Amino acid sequence: MSVLYKRVALIGLGLIASSMVHAMRRAGLADEIVGTARTAETRAIAREDGLCDRVVETAAEAVEGADLVVLCVPVGAMGPLAAEIAPHLAPGATVTDVGSVKGAVIAAVAPFLPSHVNFVPAHPLAGTEHSGPRSGFAELFDNRWCLLVPTEGTDPNATARLRALWEGMGSFVDEMDADHHDLVLAVTSHAPHLIAYTMVGVADDLRRVTDSEVIKYSAAGFRDFTRIAASDPTMWRDVFLNNKDATLEILGRFTEELFALQRAIRTGDGDHLHAYFTRTRAIRRGIIEAGQDTAAPDFGRSGKPVTAGSDGAPRPAEEPRQG
Ligand SMILES: NC(=O)c1ccc[n+]([C@@H]2O[C@H](COP(=O)([O-])OP(=O)(O)OC[C@H]3O[C@@H](n4cnc5c(N)ncnc54)[C@H](O)[C@@H]3O)[C@@H](O)[C@H]2O)c1
Ligand SMILES: O=C(O)C(=O)C[C@]1(C(=O)O)C=C[C@@H](O)C=C1
Image (cartoon, rainbow, N blue to C red; front, side, top):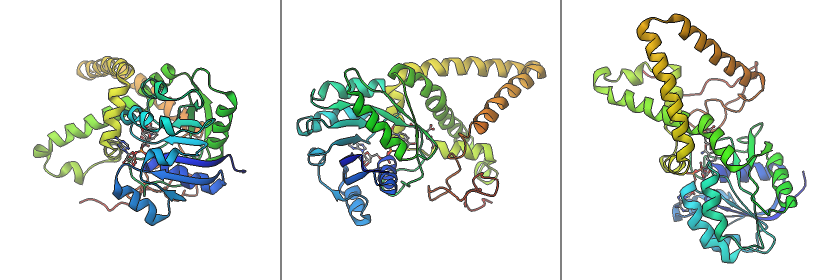
């Protein structure tokens, strides 16, 4: 792979930014990577680990002379960050973000950006429940989708170069408009996270009834919920507040289906339950056949991928047995 950008500025050095550093270095996609983070502690860790070629104190400093600027902060922080960096952006630079929501981010960021830069919002559909500068790894984006949402007036060359970057980091790339993105993600990511948070909250409410059994006997299904529900509270608060309409729409539909299943259980309508579960099992099989489940293992406590077994499936996470 050849160098695509001379200087990449990463703002917010968490899971996604640190994974980008590792993935860009793996493929030699950038000459120089400059990073900055809001807290002195994160900047110190990044310096100690040599995460970036340079770690600077402010976002304004980081973007100077950069031909690619990547906003890697929670979606609620994107607008104020755009205001801060706008006067310092180099002419011809591409500004992108990795936020999980696109409509609200575009509305918050675009008004601040000068006409001499190209804004190409992006969203890698890859993550773990871990955060921070030490949680990243080069393989995070391998065989996962990254969605680009180019804004009006964006130079197609800027979009093409960003596409090449994500492909170079291992991803498949598609383009989508912001509304469609937000609806699709409400179904595939945002509502499922809210449901996981709720299920773990319900179990916690029952703690006194079940004593420590929730932990001791937690079965695989519930453990999957707890992994998702361990995701960063700031990130997910911002996702729900910024993808309100689509999430509420999907939760409305979810509630209707849940009521129908509840009714089938109460009335002993086994046919309804069986037909429903048959339909959902086919969806899971479709995901596996499409090869989309390979990069979604239980990453274990380290947050790093575990070695694949002989069947190509990830080995079980190395977590201590409970009880
Ligand atoms: N974690 C995932 O699974 C995942 C996947 C795809 C996209 N995203 C998106 O990527 C972005 C970053 O997520 P992450 O998982 O890397 O998060 P993270 O928590 O690991 O890192 C976030 C970084 O942003 C900084 N930050 C937090 N609040 C800030 C503020 N108000 N102003 C400036 N900086 C601030 C933090 O200090 C940290 O350096 C988010 O927008 C998220 O929606 C996350
Ligand atoms: O695997 C996980 O931990 C994730 O939740 C990753 C996940 C997802 O829902 O798939 C979470 C948020 C993102 O914006 C993209 C990816």
